[in-house]
Image (cartoon, rainbow, N blue to C red; front, side, top):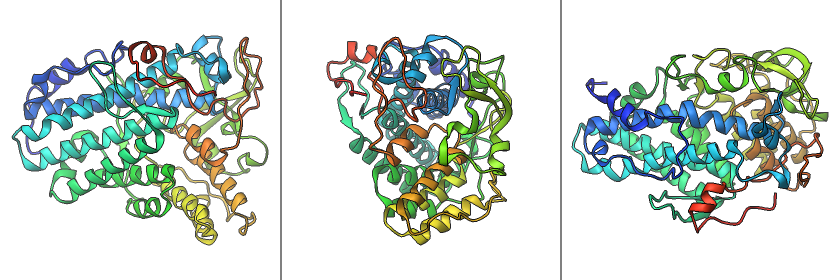
Length: 448
């Protein structure tokens, strides 16, 4: 950074001093004066980041993980209990889905407010462009996380609580457009990406981050050629991380899945079953899991759980913004869905045989020995590797729904006597009670 902005921390505290508070209206605007100075905009950018990495990201991982067998609950607390059972009986007042919805909307809303104000503020060109591009990225990312969990979402927040909803296709299209615009911004303004890299994290490659999320959302949207092109623009040797100091900001996954005898733990074998069990000798098993092999305390499904390691061994562990292996698996899947099976298998093997991953996520396996002429077998292998490689990254609900769209979750109701072997127990979540109560435009809940 060329300047040290006195007062940025104070502004962050003013805007985000109560990060954990769940507001009745997550669309509420912040103080106008905060966004009318360079210091205010930069402080809001830092505050938005801090709130996302400590509050929103953890919920995106925890809530969807409980719905897809990544995570098991080891207590009788109602929030994880309801999520792990899912089905039609999942209430719209569940505090997990309420927190995920509200926190993502809060981050999205601040990104929108920054974008509304940044052009009117005079400050150094590379800093203004960087802040603008980063706000586009944050808005795209929060739209993406919401679209992974809900069938429709509010594309633009409303301070009056009457935001209009759009379907997932429109949401993903908006996220893609924002990322493309941000890439154009930083590629056309020297120093803007460097400014963000120095502002946001100790290790951050903004241009690779933008392309990684562009690849992700193009894949989700079915834009396979565009997903491959974006993934090829990511530097697989660069690390981008969300950082924590262990006190004011803490690794949220460590707090809910590791710290102090937690109520949730990872399920044995990554929650995979049958033919998709991890192979003996897969190095990612030891990377992510420390063998515990005990039944969870009062675990209603009696599924073995493990201790979580990987990126979550302490309150100060950094979490990757994306994993390089995701880019290889995006290419594998996009090629497979375009029926280019040879290139799909090449990328599967790049993941399986990886030994020099910059984060240490190395399978150390041999080449895949499955049927290289079968698109369905190849896709199964890609899903299996996504489930292992991208463990606890908050992607499996989206992944399972995309790979197995005809899968029908058990439709069971209270008292939650459902089938504990289901691979996912919802397609999309119900809209929150607060949203239904406050917003007349809230859609009807999906059936399951």
